[in-house]
Length: 74
Image (cartoon, rainbow, N blue to C red; front, side):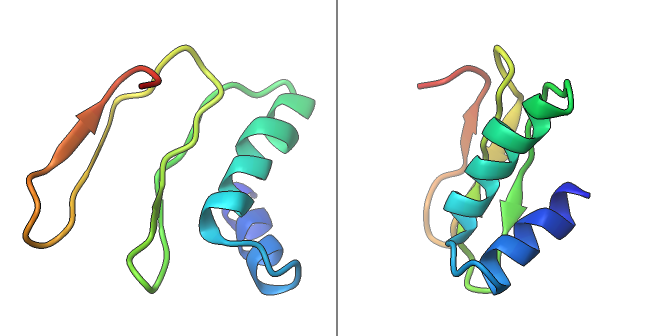
């Protein structure tokens, strides 16, 4: 359901990938008692990695750049 909500917020609400993911993870997920996060990539290559837990293992990269990793908020 998170992916559907993000897509709807982008398609019908005009939000960016980052804004839509942030809203779902920080507002909708906790309202349901959920803790976690997600990694999302849109068709333009934008990346969003929001999480509402203490930390989340994640990695991302762009062509020509060194890969990036994270666990906690930076």
